[in-house]
Length: 412
Image 1 (cartoon, rainbow, N blue to C red):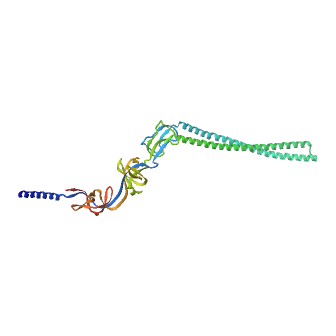
Image 2: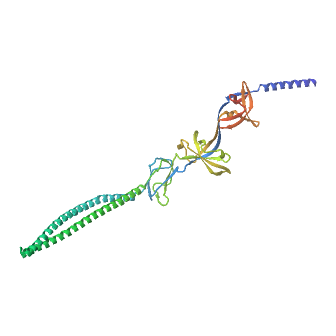
C-alpha cells in the first residue's frame, strides 16, 4: 500500500510538473503593431437612402395641336440635346394655311404700293389743276377790273357826250362777259381745291388701309408659322428620355391638358433622400458632409452636403424616419432615380486626439482593452474610448502618444 501511494505521488508530481511547465511557456506574441498617435476621428451617422429627381428635373414634353404622329425620333434611354427634334405631327393642313398666309402678305405688299403710287400721281395732277385754276382766276380778276374800269369810263364819256351809245353797249357787254368768266374761274378754283382734298384724303385712307391690312396679314402669317411650328416637337432642354407615351401612327388630341409625348430627365438635377432614424435626426444639421455609395458603383465614393431636413416623418416597418436631402455631388450623370444609397453623415470631427485603428480595441469582460507592447512583453491594458468611425477609435485614457499596441496577436 505504501509503495502504491508513493508511486501515485510520483505520477501526480510528474503530471503537475509537465502542466506548469507547458503553461509557463504559453505567451502572447504581437503579429502586427501600430504606434498610438494623434489624429482625427469622425462621428458618423449611417443610413440608407434613395436617389430622387429634384423639382424641375423632369420635363414632360407634350403637343399643342391635334393630329397623327408621323415621326418619332427617340426611345427610352436616349440622350437628347436642347433643340433636338423629338416628333412630328401631320402638318399638311397647317402647311397649306401657312402658304396662303404668305401669299396674302405678298399680295398686299405688291398691290398696295402700286395703288398708293397711282393715287399720288392723281394728287399731283389735282395739285397741277389747282395751280392752273389759281392762275386762271388771277387772270380773270385782272380782266374783270380792266373791263369794269372801261365800262365806268364809257359811262362818264357818254354822259359828257364824248362817246357813242354803241361803244357804251360794247363796254357793258365785255364787263358782263368778264364778270361771268370771273365767277367761272372762282368755281373752277373751288372744284380744284376740292379735288386736291379728296385726292389727299383718298391717299391717306389708302395708306392707313395698307398699314392695317399689312399688320393683319403679318399677324396671320406669324400665327400660321406658330401653329405650323407646333407640329414639330423639340426638346426644351438637354437630358435623358425617361418615358415615351406616344408612337408613330397614333393620333393625339390637344385639349385642356397637352398630350404627353416623352419625359426628359435632367441628369444634373438629382438629389439624395437619406432616411435617418428618429434617434439620430437631432444630430443632423444643414451643411454637414455626406459620403455615400450606390450598389452599381461600389468602389466609387460620392460626396454631398445636407441641404434640407424634412419635418414630416415617414414610417417604415413601424420605425420613424426623417428625410434628409443631400445635394451637390459630382459625377451625378452616373446616377439614376430610385437607386439605393448607403450614406455616412459626418455629424462631427475631433482633431488632434489620440487614436488607434479600430482593430486594436477589444471588448473583453465588459470593458475595452488593448494589447500594449512593452519591449518583448504584451500587456492587456484597459482603456476608455471616445468617438469611433470607420477607421479609428479615440482613446480618452489608458494610453499615451508614442505607445505601441498590437492589432493582432498570437499565443505561443
